[in-house]
Image 1 (tube, rainbow, N blue to C red):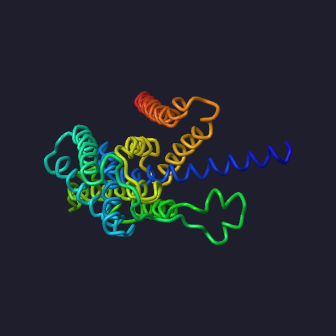
Image 2 (image 1 turned 45 degrees about the vertical axis):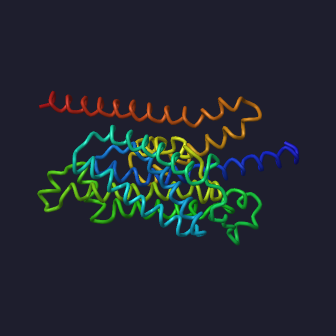
Length: 316
């Protein structure tokens, strides 16, 4: 391979990996919240609406107050409100989780479009205060790593920290144990003197906060202070798929989000060779494959357990 070809290869590789991190971040943030509700026994497919509303609130507050930090804070606070709203119907009123999630997504699409057009016109929010990319001092001097790791929004690096913190929270703290128990064995948790419903409320609130952060990253980190209608672009559904594929484990969920980000970035690189209609479908096809894999592997696991139980009975 000659020098020119190798140089082009490294540029394409670094560009793809850089885009992978940026694309995976909002999905990973939402998935970190989604794994909490999953552990609590709540199927939350309303994350797409939570992300969309978080993106709008972050951009609108950032625009009016000229502060990206206040925009992010507003998105987190609004995430708490949405989490409480979701828990009210799914936990308190025991409504169907699937229907509430679909209703939340539909409501978010409508209300954000209406407010965006009413307040900012058909072009949406443009020019709001946003988070500038961070160039890491030591990494930025290394050619390949500079393009891959350095020069991202704060949210990209924050996500790495949050993955570790969430793992510690879920598996190494009493609250994390109680949240898992509220989904796996609520009666046992109730016998131990803890309220499973309370833990479900906590999980729902945390999910709202993380989805708010995911939305804030889209509008203030990824698109430099811009909000457009439907900008969540089904990322909430992708996040839900990552939660299932990663078995609600923070590390595995992040790896699943990275896989989505990689194929999405690969699709962008292939647009000059393959039709954009096909390349844009690549990450969603991969998501479907992920879900099929989870269903098939789960079925096989149950079959193996059934066979093992049958052998034990035969031995007796």
